[in-house]
Image (cartoon, rainbow, N blue to C red):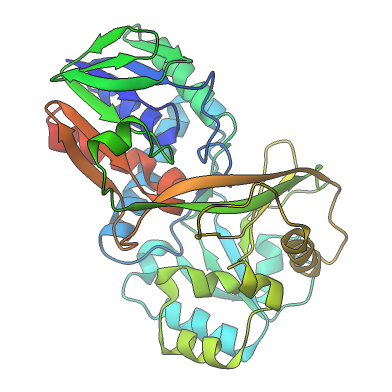
Length: 373
């Protein structure tokens, strides 16, 4: 079988991986010289802890298994089973963590409520003031800026993979056949459009009423911390954002403990992961209203800096990079991904939202299974 994958981000690359692993030939087409979207502009978290139960959690857990397996084959991914800690400071935050521990799927997530002293044994860099922390053993991390590069090198080594950058696919001309902006035609037994947040052009022509929206976020990265941050770190505002924490205890938190005004205005939470070079990737904000701003705002970065410094009990290293990113999210946020046959032999796979990096291996596996690869 010959598979054409359109899109060089992590979802597209994982579809290429699935096809090659199953013995097929793959041509992957990317409109930029390299993928430059949300697949690179994210935390690199394999984030199980906050996922909704049912299909979303099952997908995340399966993806976590696949990431670990692929990471063993492709060491350049930088896969590490680092887990995560969410420190809590108030009785209401503690109650939300306790409620999470009472979920029937808590064991599958690797949840444990630990004291502040136990949290510091797990992650000695957390020297600041907090009362306890929710530990999630199943969370993990990879290196988002380089993951696609290393995956592609492994794919090329099979002799059954071709990467064509700098080409925008413009039209579907026949079953399983597309034409790019160079005038070249690419024919396969199946075409997968994994175009991320690029929802205009061909995607709009094929699906004018696509039930997917775009979301913008701001993030930053520091110089090396100078010590190891052994886990990913979130703050209690993540309880408000992730569906796993829905409970009467969360309702009470939202009713009685407001977010900081800047955090509320920008729909913020803290997520933090250490990169292999020692720097910290820190975020994020959420902007849903179009048109998006073209600039980044400083107030959210100042808020995040304060939260991180309180947890670390020390000044944050120098900020080296700030950026904004845009991802595609199903308008029905309970859906893991939008997967649709849009023409004969052509499927569109988009809209995983913030789950994209986490769930991409399992999303691609499901596509491969459903298409009978």
